[in-house]
Length: 261
Image 1 (cartoon, rainbow, N blue to C red):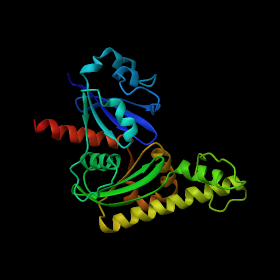
Image 2 (cartoon, helix red, strand yellow; image 1 turned 180 degrees about the vertical axis):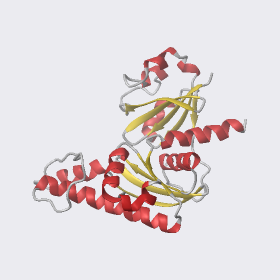
Image 3 (cartoon, rainbow, N blue to C red; image 1 turned 90 degrees about the vertical axis):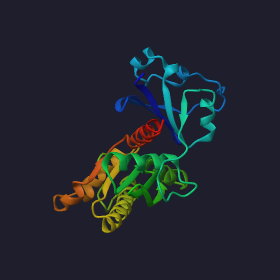
Image 4 (cartoon, rainbow, N blue to C red; image 1 turned 120 degrees about the horizontal axis):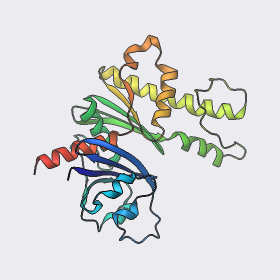
């Protein structure tokens, strides 16, 4: 059978991908499993309406599931499934012991797919910046994600409102509270991201910059509006959005693992 599944159990959701060999067929996401759910679930019970209907016609019990997890309490739901192939490391040099496997997967997938050097900007619950060159982790940074910033201002102040993402980059100097929050969060985040990008490019001028994650497309669009002007064609030509970097990392790992058999 050439079909197989890739799974990343992230901080807020399970991220699934259905592959035919190396061809990506479908991506979907499911919610975390409730702690009250019995641990001996079967593979079909893990899917929801987001899963492709065609997948349910496949012999699911025969599908290999190559899995990365950063949430141990969720991992237990797969412990009895013999088809799961756990990925506990990636062949990256220079990683530190507590570095998240999801970050490693994205960096490995970026280097495998786009070539080294790369800088991965993953915008999710947190925003992580992860740089790599020649299969080696160079360093990175972690900060609150976009929504986490807005939520923190609402929850940790007495009167600031809940604010949504604006469709476009707000003006720098706002004249009301909502726009002031949007401007403060987004313009400051973008300036910080740009600083890291420029630092990386100064040391490695051929670096490919890759945005990914649940809010990655939005952050990439805002970055284009803010910094990627016609006067900066070099930056524009090497900055991309790819939502599937974690899956490309699993593909690369699986290729190496199966080649070794």
